[in-house]
Image (tube, rainbow, N blue to C red; front, side, top):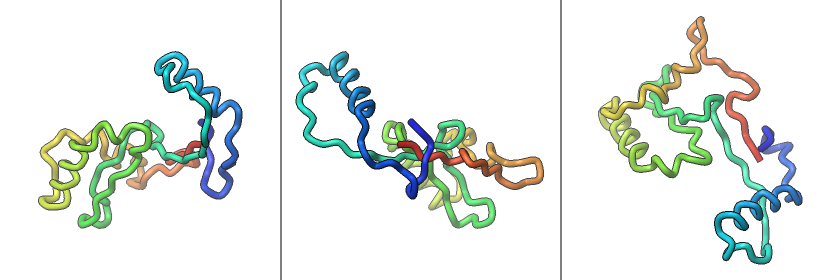
Length: 123
């Protein structure tokens, strides 16, 4: 994957895009290795450490932040839903979610580290 943004994303499929999928199909799902019918380029976002962010907004306690689920968030959907419901209704969650806190990106002066690659969008 290559970091990009919505304005500069090359939306034309490349032979290497299909080749990666073909390799997987041949090795893991050979019966699905049929003719290509269509291909689209999608985008997804990640945090710098590739873990989600689930937290309350530091300046607006009535706002819950939940992002960075691209690629693997679906596997945790039930736990994420439970945590978000608790955050929305009681302001805290009983699940161990501290490692997903926005605070892990905090700077020494109390701000949030924002780097060019902080929320990379990938092709």
